[in-house]
Length: 125
Image (cartoon, rainbow, N blue to C red; front, side):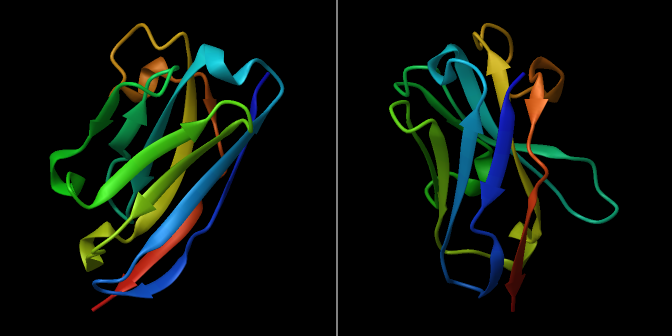
């Protein structure tokens, strides 16, 4: 079992920044690729960003490229999502997720075995 706890969500004005963190416990963190997903009311949950086990490879939703940065610290068992130039359409509940070995499609929700409870991000216009 892997437990994931997100933090860092909140209310911010458009153009502002937030940094989400996800703390993992329970198993060897470096065995897991880590992803961030988000879900807005009435919409499907969507992929936002992901990072490989080593941290060398990073993947982003096109609409967040250049604004969001995913990173991880395997020594501290944490993954972060730095979100800059936030837009109202970024408003959603953000979830972190863990994918053992990360060998499949890192953008697919079904590849992730463990999920956090989510943290709300609200961007006002």
